[in-house]
Structure formats: structure tokens, C-alpha cells
Length: 255
Image (cartoon, rainbow, N blue to C red; front, side, top):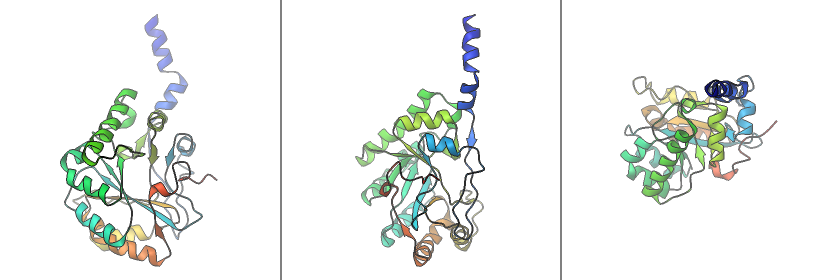
């Protein structure tokens, strides 16, 4: 009887809804119009649990972010460009990256960039327990602190953009702002790099005020196009800003 009660509670509509997985998707910007998640079915969840995907549309700000699951030889070049152009960025790192690339991690911190949490082992966060979610995030935070001396970690990007209401809630209660994106393209496949012009055109065609730009640091195309992207965006009146500049509760502009 007790087992039946437990099963009934576990399968209650509320529990099922909280566990429902979502894959982050969005309607791409064209002609400078804002990217949209209005048709995706999870907008209200993001608003309720600290999820953001763009900044305020009232100004021409851009927020540059990179996912660093592993090193492919281009992050140093990316950091060189950011330093030369005086552009802040956020780097979302995994446990593998922290262990494998401590010197690059130190450089990110020393040069004023945000280091964000991309989980320890890059799991599907909707398929693990509350305790496992906490362990995945705390291990990255603690390891980064040991390498860089920075104990604070405010931002999280769920692996592969997969999330549920439960994973958002647990992460937000741990103090994280969950950062998705409003500019992206298929740049993570190292076997399908098509040249810096391809990267440049894909990014520039999607720019819009308040854009959170997702680039993968493993991409040779991104590393080679980054300087031109920054120059062209600035020529259009955009400014690159840190995620910290708007504060956790202001990154998403409510309708």
C-alpha cells in the first residue's frame, strides 16, 4: 500500500509537469527585430525561475558568451581578441575544462571575464536527481574557486540547453541566473567548419538589441571571425556589456 501511495504521488500531474524536459529553442532575429520564445511553451517557466535569454531591448547592448566544454586550441586566440578590443565575455565551463585548462581559466578571471557554470559532467539535467544537480553545480563552482580564487559564481547554462521546471527551480534556488541565448548557429561541430565568413554572416544576420550571443570556443570559424564581428557590431551602434551590468533580475525584459 505504501508503495502504491508513493508511486501515485510521483506520478501526480504536478510532478509530471515539473519533470517535463524542454530543449531551448527560439525564433531567430531578422532585420534587428528581437528574437522570440513566445511560441516555445516555456516562456513563463523562465520568467518564474530565473531563466533569461536576452537583455533589455531598450538599448543596443550585446552580451557575448562562450560555451567551453573542452579546449580545441582557440580560446587563447579568443581571449587575445577580447583583450585587444576591450570586450567583456562570459565563459561557461565544465568540470573537464576546469581540470584540463587551469591556465586559461586563470586568464579569463584575470582579464575580467565572467566564468559561468556549465555543469561538471555535461549531463541531461532533467534526468538526474535534485542532489545530483546540486553536486554537478557545486563541483564546478568549488573547482573554479580553487583555480582562480573567485568564490562567487552567479550564472549557469544548462548542458545542451535541456531543462525542466524542476531543474530550473533547483538551480535558481542555489542562486543561479540561468542564461540561454538569442543569437546562435551550428558552430560546435569541429568537422563542419566553413570559414570565418560563414561565422560572420550567421552572427551578424541575427544581431538585435539586448542579444545574448552564444558561441562555442571549439570553433575555428568563430575565433577567426570574432574581431570582425566586434568591429561590425560596433559600427552599427552596438555596445558589448557584461552580464553583470544589468543585474540578475533585469536581464529579461518582461512584456
